[in-house]
Length: 229
Image (cartoon, rainbow, N blue to C red; front, side):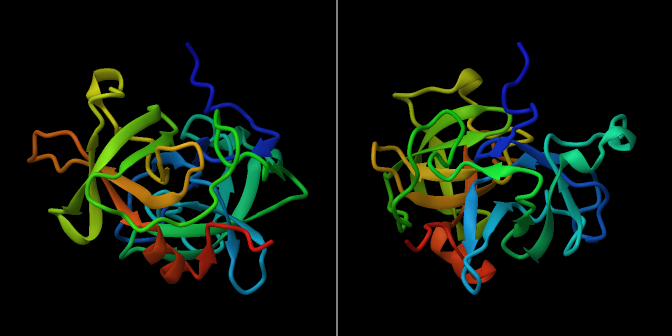
């Protein structure tokens, strides 16, 4: 069955496929595809921005972002119709970046922030041990986890393990293509918890996901996850 998050979207929303072309950031050399996390807002101007990981927005400031993604096979056939924005900020330390959305080319779905989920987040939530969370990634779709404290590979990040009450296919809550997804509280009135950037380390057998806390990402990128209204 075709992945419904890999198609062309007239209105942009969190959880769908994006991609850039070629890397000029030495730390991120290979070409990869990722997830548009959600619509966020520039603190200085209030302009809507798209958020993902730095290793997805790998062309650096000024690079173009495509939706759906380009590949080596399709890059020559992706015209301006598919360009949804231009990268304006990237931080490789915390693997995050934002791009300005070209609203002449695509609308933004502000009423519903994520694919397959009604409503939008109403707050940024500091993480807590045992917090139940969920995300929508380009490849895994909706997956559910439980925060298990600080990530052993990065003390600034959090570790999220699968929620046994809501198991994912093959117990995978993170696969390639999910990078850039947003972890939310798993509740009706959901809040933003963190920015997903990776799965478990290759040397570790236990399944888990890694994310940087949302409040850290807001400070680093000078953005707000919640629109001031």
